[in-house]
Each structure stands twice: as C-alpha cells, then as structure tokens.
Length: 309
Image (cartoon, rainbow, N blue to C red; front, side):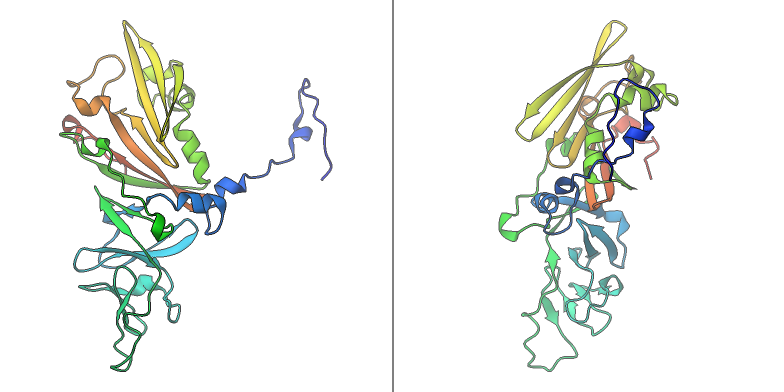
C-alpha cells in the first residue's frame, strides 16, 4: 500500500486517512491458543441465562469454541463440546436424562463432567464406560446466570461471590445482548464515563436523567483488581457522585441509575440505591462478536419497573 503523508493543518484530508490501523489481535482474538483467549480462560466466564435452557440442550459459542449447555434431571449443569467425541454428532440433539446427557446417535450417556457412564450398544464387558470422555468444563449457577471455567483444571480459581450480589431487600434480574464487535470495545465502553453526556443525554434526548447532560469531574482510582472511576456533578445545592468498578478482565459494576434523578429521589434511598445498580460481563464469543450479560439490582420499591428483555 502506498504510504500517504497527512498534512495535519489542512481540511478535506480524507485521502490521507484511508489506511486502516491493524487490529490488536493479541488482545481481541479469543480462540484457543491465542494470548487473549488463554488469558480470559483463567477466569470464570458467563455462559448463558438459566432461563434460556429448557428440556433440551442449548447450543452456544464462547471463546471461539462451539459448546452445548444442558441441565440433567437431577438439576446438575453440564457444558460439553458440541460435537460428540465418538462420531462427531452434534450434541444439541442429545437428550438430558436423570443423570447426564444421552447421545441421540448411539445412545451413550455422558455425565456432566464428560465421563461416559453408559454405552448400551457395546458388549457387556466393554471398557469404554469410565474410560472415554466427552470434553467438558466446570459449570456454576448463581442468581439466574450460568458461569463456566474453560482454563487449565489445575489453575481453576474459586468461583467469586461479591457483596453486591447479596444486597438486602434487592433482587438480581439477568438479561443479555449480543453485539458485533470485540470484547475489548465493550469493556472500554463500560469504563468511559464521558460518553454519557452526549450519547445518553444531549445528542438524542435524555435516556436516564437530565443531570447526566452535565459534564462531570472525573477521577480514576487504581485498585488491586482493576480500577474504579468517580464522576462528580453539582446538582443545585448538592454534589452527586457516581462510581463504577472494572474488575479485570471483563466485568464492570456500575452505580445505580434506577433510583433518584440527581435532584430528589422518588423513594427513600435504601442501601441498594447507593451501591452497584448493575453488573455486566463482556462475554467473548469470538473475535468479532461479543455478548454482554448483565444482571440488574432493582430495589424493592422498583420491582414494577420494566426489565430489559
């Protein structure tokens, strides 16, 4: 490509801006074996909402892998590679049973850890049960969300429980959105407090509260797990401070926007109103697609509000 020198002080300079910057593949590519993918696999990642899974398995993609999520008759969750280890049959057509997942092709029964526990078409003395495994990952359900750990088994960390999950009198309401961009773009958006002034207020009308249209004083605070920012606005005789946490690598906890208008709250402020109003995980699907899985914390006086689909 011809290198074009850009005169920085001239208008109508489109010709000098046609080169596209290279993607930062080291961070944004998340397939197995990539630096970004291996990094993200060291953490528990959100997989789906529990309500998405009925009596049939759910096909999904996470970190560049095609997977199947299911819940057996005993209420246990399993997450396995989509294609059967035997003949590559797609396991979204398998059948959950009292214990595990039964293949639709040859009837083998896999436990939630991937172990083959029944092979009904094999001889009675077959050594396949107990020795053959479907690739599987550990799964954890918490407050309506399903999480999985896709990293090396020896490095699996404890499943994290944050105090914001246990706000007295509150409830957690999960929702999910898929977006055509990489995980880093959405994570960056979550920790950019400046965009709320125009995108959410001045450009196309108020989406939250009019006071968001006032440019805030911003401060960023580095912490052991990432960092947090505070955005401070003066509202009449009051100072309104909103905070947001980034918990590396891809979780943010945003200050509530569901109570108060920056001037006078419409109900007495309980603990939930001054804590995180939403947790959001940027779920890496593949390099160019991401799913944002969130859970909101409506307070008791706001249970009648419309919940995002």
